Every structure is written in C-alpha cells, then in structure tokens.
Image 1 (cartoon, rainbow, N blue to C red):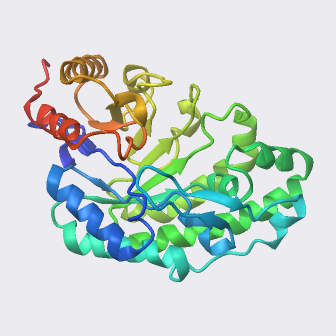
Image 2 (cartoon, rainbow, N blue to C red; image 1 turned 135 degrees about the horizontal axis):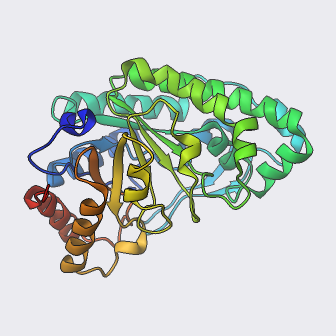
Length: 329
C-alpha cells in the first residue's frame, strides 16, 4: 500500500474486498468480530469498516427495520424529513454517543486488533448522502426540496455537515488511517455540476480537510447507476478514488489519464461477480490492469460485493490472483 500511494513499483498488486454483514453490524462487538474474522481469512491490504448503511441516521429518529437473516437488508420505515421545514429542525450530533459513538468504538477496536498489520479506513457518508438517507433514499425529495426551498435545504445540510465533520475528527482520533468517503448521489440522474457547486463542494471540502492532515489512505467512493463525472471531484483532498468502473464507467484507463491519485477499482461489485468463472475474472483483471498501468492501483470492487451470494472461494481466488500477477511493464 505504501508503494502504491507513492507511485512506486511493488512486488504484487495490492488488493482489498469488502462486504456488508447484516445481523452483525448493529453492535460494536459483533461488527468487530466479523471484520477481524474476515481479515484473518483473506489478508486484505486495507480494511474498509463495514458500518451498516443507515448508521448515520439512527440517532436522528429514523425508524428502521433491521434484518433478521443475512440475505436481507435494513430499510427505513419512516424518514425524518417529510416536508421542507423539517430540514431546519436538524441539529449537529455528538459522534461519541449513540450509533455514531458505536462506530467510533468499532474503529478504535479494529485499530487495536489489526492496525499494526493493515490500514483501517472508516466509512463516512458525504452530507448530501446523509440527506438522502434522512428524506428519501431515491433522492427525489432531496432534489425537489433543494430546488423549491433552498434556504431550508441549506440549513439542513449545514447541520449535517457539522455532524459529518465531527465524526471524521472522531474517527481519526480513534486511530483510523483515513476515511472511505461515500458520495452516493454522484451518478444520480438529477445530480449536476451546478448542484454540486451550489450545495456540495464546500461541504465535502470542509469535511475532508478535517481528515487530510492525518490521512494516510482516504478513499473517495463515487456511487451511482450511471456514468459518473469524476473530474468534478478530482480536487478533493483524498489519496484514492473508488467507483463502479466495471459496471458504469469510466474505465480505469480513462481515469488514469485524468489523475495520478491511487485508483482502487477493477473488481465487479454487488451481484456482477455472481456466477463469474475464475478464468473470466483473471482475464478481466489482467486486461484492466494492463490498460490502466500497474502503478498507483489497488484491485478493489467498485462498491461492496454481495454479502451472501459471493462465495469465500471466489474471494480466496482474487487474493491469490493478486499475489501471483506480475506487470508486463
């Protein structure tokens, strides 16, 4: 990882894969145990903390149905924000209490367990991403409110940003090597450059500036079901980029032409890897890495891989392939 971050040659391609653990991500004890078990099995080159996807809104009064079986996902029963005025009722939260405090404790304990062996990267959602989870995870209500009631929307984003900034600071204080900064609206059909400049850039910049002085490995995750305009985000202070290169693009080769940051991608995410044969994956990885160039690259999924249909055998194959692959350069 140090060689990848420095743009130097390495003896093998660094690799990491992450997947959610429903039913094991609601307490610190369970999540830490699950992640330590996972790391002991696969020996990834960095560990992304797999907080449940709604942890950032648990303390806001969101009503959530938690899964009882690993193939299910948590889902919101009632969102906190129903009307534009509800944004003005949000207040910054203390990251040392409640669900956020639980996640800080998870980071601290993972650092104690694994930190001398591997970088620990804490999951942190961008302010607009948190807004999605407070109002409507499809994003329709958020964009409607920002267009029709920008003052109320801005007030809500200010409160959320302060919470995210405090949480970022708490993660770094707990010993994290950086954050996995998830921007989940990056590929949303209604997301535009204008929206980003008006409502997001300043918030993202201020959060990541909390992390940057102490960060060894912060990763910007650009999430979306359609092509992402990565160039919008390249000036943000992170060491690495992560996006759905194998599903929606752009390709790693295209992004390499834009930036010298570490590219963490190349592995099909979610269900895209289900049913793939080892030979197919090997050919895909080899083709991708040859096109992008082998330096400053980490083999990683564009997002979480499916947590119950992806077999451990496939993950062991990926780990072994990364160990054996050698660059032709």
